[in-house]
Image 1 (tube, rainbow, N blue to C red):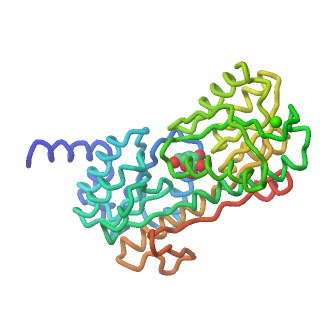
Image 2 (image 1 turned 180 degrees about the horizontal axis):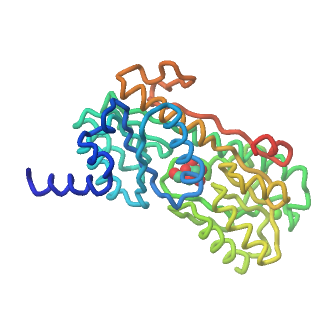
Image 3 (image 1 turned 60 degrees about the vertical axis):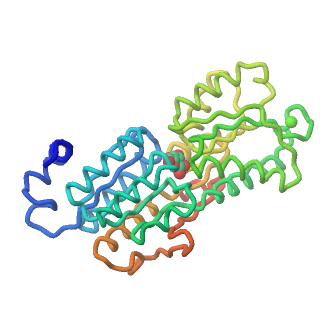
Length: 340
Ligand code: GAL
Ligand code: CA
């Protein structure tokens, strides 16, 4: 063995002591399917709070084993984690890219090892990359849909609340918390939420926009606090957050400043439903992580068995992109109780 391989095996033994204790590459004494999975960052509200627990629960229901590692927001770390999974001989990889532009390296690793690969949540941005390998699929959403739904909610509320136009100029002065630059969800939400106003014939003016690769509550709080105390602080009429986590931080900042403004998020986390109940948030969009988690595992399990990936499942593949896309749903003060 070369030094590098020895190192990788040692690392694997440290990270997956169970697998090595059993002596085999799969769970000891069984032909149980083993899934090697990651979350791009355990610090992410939605990924860690919704997606990960459902993947673990559903794996148990399906009688498969899943090991989910934390890539800590580092693509290089994920690359190493995938090497370790491959060395260990997992049956299938379920991967949440850290950098959506880096799908190629992961796909090529899986292909060289002839292990099926399901990418989920962050869609690869490099054109044609999904066609490099016949055993790679994607599970996520149609990113634009979340922006369209959020935008339509905001337009309807803007129209029925004339007092939201604080300076009465007919223009929506907004600030926007974007999330990860280059992430298809962040990009599409930013474009389509604002486009909904244009489509409705309502002018908008962006006062500020900030991006955060971690989509974090801390970032939402810091930026909103800074905006409220800036020279345009009293001109803000609407806060658009591309996820709930950032919206939560912005809500805290608004409470601290004693200035509550209309605010919308995406994900429909439990805390968002509570904020809607309390009148502190005007809407969110259900990002159905439960069904995305189930679809990811359904495809992975079928792929590990060499079956058609959607066989016996409710999912359908979009032919051109090899993607299963789970629908978004509008969550408003009228219907939020249905999502609790
Ligand atoms: C989005 C979600 C964000 C964040 C991101 C991570 O779909 O809305 O809150 O979790 O995925 O990739
Ligand atoms: Ca205005």
